[in-house]
Image (cartoon, rainbow, N blue to C red; front, top):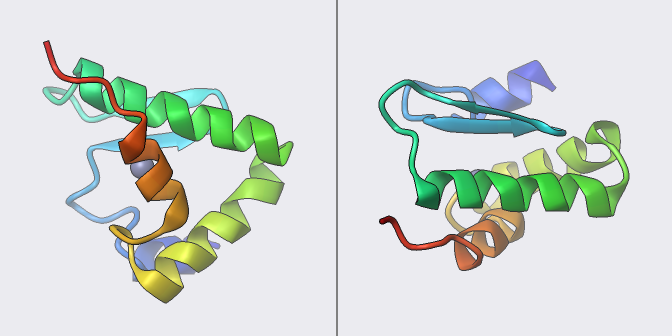
Length: 85
Ligand SMILES: [Zn+2]
């Protein structure tokens, strides 16, 4: 799973937010309403899939096959972003 995350750029230098279950990690200087709402939607996605173990393989497969921007979980998270203040 680590290799898939690295190969897809998920854990690359461009990453500014990461959600693992109920833990949301945001790179210093990037905290904002829009990013937090995006990451909270990922929390919802984890909840609806039941666990990190159930969610992550599906998420990584989406990223690996259609790319980060077109991954359905990412599109859903972007659709639920709140505007920045
Ligand atoms: Zn996302």
